[in-house]
Picture 1 (spheres, rainbow, N blue to C red):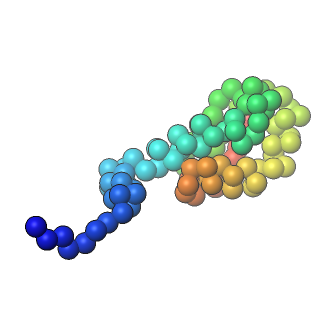
Picture 2: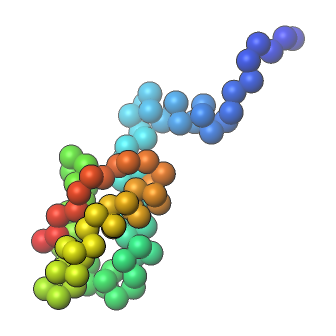
Length: 96
């Protein structure tokens, strides 16, 4: 048996997920799961809802002071969350 081309398993898995339309939902799940780690326990406790629509993360924060602090760090949070997902999944965060 002759093998023509050896491919990396990671690349094959990524191609499969992309072809089946599963790559984006997986990355979105990674971002939502990484939220407590990125923002810290205190902020995570005050976060009641996280959703991603059209590359925007919507987060419901119950404390105005925390919401304001996160607004000032929005671009940094986008970058950190995308790093955790391993792809540019979100481009903005909208705090409610």
